[in-house]
Length: 267
Image (cartoon, rainbow, N blue to C red):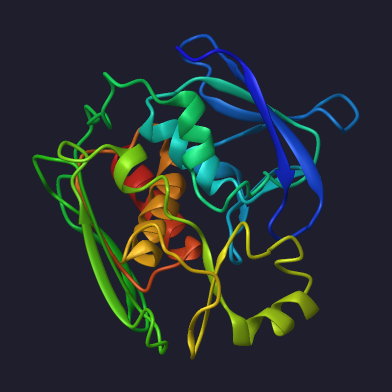
């Protein structure tokens, strides 16, 4: 079990500084946020039923209490075997830190732990599709994650990566992969009130001329980061069922739609 700790940083979209304190909880309590900056400190369960919006990040809400960009923290907790934790936060967005899950894993991961395989398994294929993007959960004896991306940028183009948790640990293969964006989109997104906290120290930026802020941590860092996001969104199920998860050009919206379908099938 980890010891309580806190990290402070800037939120990707709000640009506001917040602090998250992680406190171990009793078994069965699950993962949940507490907005300590709001009257009566409302709780927000980190479950699929709490999902509010999924525009460029995953946001959870209960009533007026919200917390945004939860996916990197939740991914790290899930992959490090932390099922029960109280996450006290003094703002509406989880800090982005360096754009990856590495700083969370540095405090959470124990060497004898590997990504656990659930007692639940996917019995029949489940597919969610939007145009040419899709995400699926396929029956498998082992936990596997395969992701593909395709962007009109020479530095990225088409990338595929398959992660086998039993072969490579989350901290070594997935957690260090940082969020990424495109130079030509920054001004437009900021005009929409998004990525106010993004900068060259917490996100990879790609232009048609190449990476603005190399070096990369992996040759295929973008697609590995998408697996980080997917694990975080699927963690909203509490325990991720054993399956081969396959995604292509997907989004937080598709990820969470798949999680909802898995929830329905497992009832």
